[in-house]
Image (cartoon, rainbow, N blue to C red):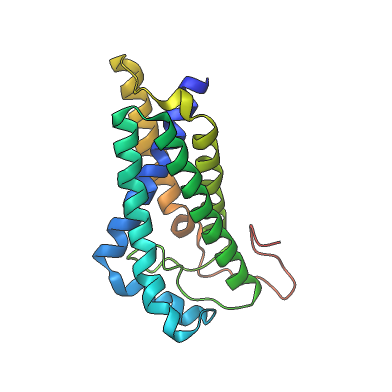
Length: 188
């Protein structure tokens, strides 16, 4: 089971990092605008954070691919641990924004994904997958040599990466407005 879970967890994290990087590069104003609407950072901190987030995602994603294809278990472990910290930061930040009653877009993609408990849940899921990838990196490297196993892992990675990427948008219901005191999913 570990020989399947390990490369899938690592693949989902790397795929999500690179998807996030590409999304931020494709629409650089989306994150900046979301951070401004959240009103949690000082105004002068928004530009550096807007630059740092896609750089961190891109560097971690590329470093992870290099480590994975280079057969470096230590490299994969380090990238997964750093990714867990990054996604944990996203989780805490998004949870804080929601708890403080602020809204707006998530800022996590080029489309207008609304900030919700589902976005927090996705970030938390990525953090857990990165922790699993760090703990199981020994089983994720070297890459699978059996073509059937490799195809299965690649299909699972592509499927779960896409499902997680669209999770907050797919579960967003603009017609639903929780009553006063109702907890939104993943926020209580």
